[in-house]
Amino acid sequence: MAARLARTRPPARTDRFSRDKETDMAAQKTTVVGVLGAGRMGMPIIGHLIHSGFEVLVYDVDAGKEAAVAEQGARFVSTAAEIAAGCDTVMVCVGYEEQLHAMMHGSEGMLGSLNEGAVIAVLSTVSPEAMQELSEEGAKHGLHVVDAPVCRGSWAADRGELLSLLGGTEEATERFTEVARAYSADIVRLGDIGSGQVGKAINNLILWACLVANHEGLALAKRYGVDIDVMREALKMSSADNHALGNWNKQTMAWAEDDMKIVQEMAVNTGISLPQAAVNREICRVLKPRRYDLDRYGI
Image 1 (cartoon, rainbow, N blue to C red):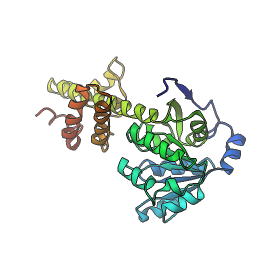
Image 2: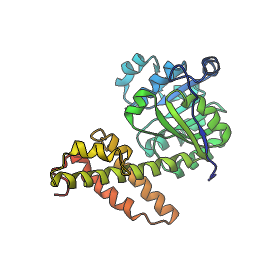
Image 3: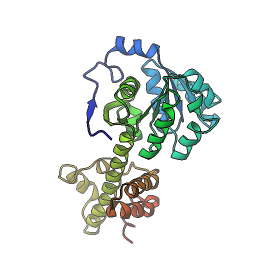
Image 4: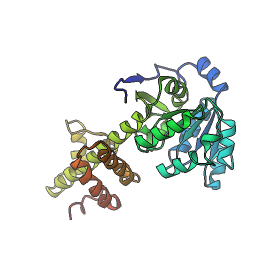
């Protein structure tokens, strides 16, 4: 994978969605965006795309989300095939790698029905190997594939302030950047296909390590009778500051197990030992149902 790093950040602007109204709107008039998955992250992203002037088609296996999608201003469709037929860019926001594979590959997969030249951007957290496979298969159909996982959590999605980590050819990532600007405060191209997912895996590895360390440190402080709120504010001014500490009591840990599973599979594939990551995976599994309950931590 390329080691070259290219960072794209929208310059100062009068609103948070558009770096240049006329340029953006001209591009958006020619781009129909399809979104596969209208979950906790997908739904606010749909809203930002609409706010930025894109025409948006949405498919989700849960037809009950149609009303919420309509409220955002997008059009809900009943099959993924309608997305394939009508969209220049398709964004995948499903929860699991298996869902991505089922939607894209096989005789009924979208790879064989998308228009030549279309862009597939995978926002879901999946393995780099899955992205490389998708890119190779997509190239046979004249498709451009970009991995485009996002960081900073659901509250950043609500505000349109996500960090997008892109992997793919310069042409493909440049094309998708016009779309990603709608919901991203920062966009970084990490390299070739799969690099974005590598970046997301490393982000998750460090995030969950910090969350575990925060619990252990604050639990110890509480045993000594230190006010935890005061302690946390002090730490936020110290060399121990971290994102998980700043968002204390907000993290659901919904994807921690899946995130760390991907990290460990990557370690096996590359022949590297990550002992702390392995331990943190097990700690996260136990911690999730009683997260932020410092009285019970370590007992």
